[in-house]
Length: 276
Image (cartoon, rainbow, N blue to C red; front, side, top):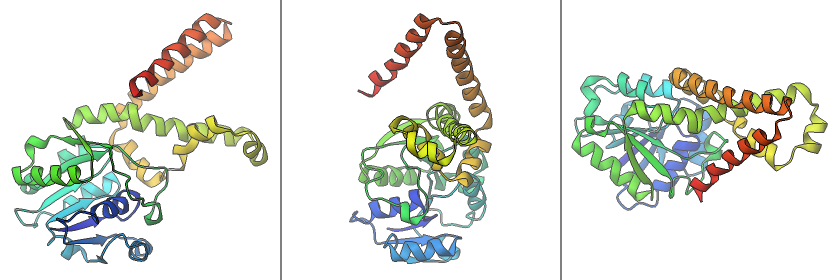
């Protein structure tokens, strides 16, 4: 099959690198509105060639690896694709995207969220193996065509991904806590420190803990602004609950209630038991 990837940054570029090893792929074609990204993607060998948007529509599979608002806009331009074409988006929000899919191509569409990524962006951030052994969430798959669902499963299986299935609404609430809120906190942490500390002190004193917590603040503001907009209500709920937890910890410290502080930290330790 011929696969077109719209968006040749971290997610799209890494997807292309992983697909190159698959023997069922004839060619990997790229499309990006950023001319510099097109040039870099070719130089890095991410795609076989750059094509026009009209040529994208002729491909067997179209991967949408662009910001979530861009996914909605592009879907409106794909209403004339062939009945057998498969369109897969890799966006970090799902409910609004699914609701905005034009009805005439709903069977063509598969809503997917690979739970992977790095804080880097652009074609140069693409890495082989980014998707290996990671989770991909497939949402509302019962509304996708049988052929399209089968093709999406085949692609993600070939990338050695672990498939989970849920409703788009459910996905977005979980993602707000697990992914979107941590990004919001990281941005705020970075801004707080930069407002109080000069560059020399940050470089001299910032150790592994701060670097780990602030790493996500390097992520693309364009992409994450769209994600925050689309998942606003769930994100606000998550931030509010986090603020409550942080306020309780602050109060315990103010009151020298070190027993409560210790208990809070012990409860936090339990999260790592889930991962072990």
